[in-house]
Length: 261
Image 1 (tube, rainbow, N blue to C red):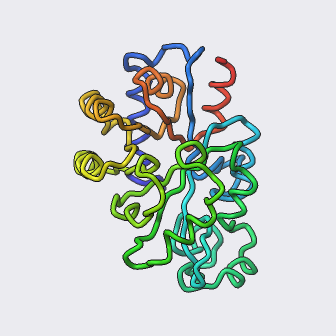
Image 2 (spheres, rainbow, N blue to C red):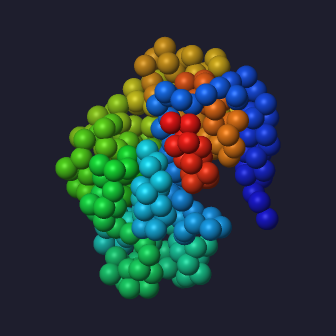
């Protein structure tokens, strides 16, 4: 059964497809699509896997958004949930309490962050969501940063979090590479973003209206919106000037962008 948030997003997309700008051309525009957890779903691949990311690279997507948890022995792995039940039917495997060798032997599809960097850095921009707090896992920032040491912040990757304080543990990465993600708390996230000096804000296009976009632009912030599901919503967000546009339907949306180019 679809979640309440997915139903709300679908309804917002339907409305956005009729809004001003929904028929504007993409030709000549720098459209930066971000594939939420890669190309996943029916007819695609399992989210946050090598196959999901490779489909994005092959299609010409600008970026993938993915999630990082630490194993018990401190290895950064790519997985959205803290446990492995939803995707792999292994609910007994919790990432934080499982060492990397055991996790990889049980579920070969789970990637190490270093593997993603080696395979895709330079061809896909990496939007990396920080899933744990440095206050509870002090080693988290150093372990993640070690895998990113040969990359350039902003050019090659950004760090995202639903909790702006999670990004504060990354002392050696510029704040301009930090993106605070809003859910139903866009006003509070924007206030924290402005106070902390982080480089960007991402959130639902339905919650990032014209006033908030203007506020963020005036402060020099980058803006990411999502999740677009149809051509009209995509064109609308490009028309509004979003820097990054997140989607769970990367193959269809990227095909539209490629065709208009």
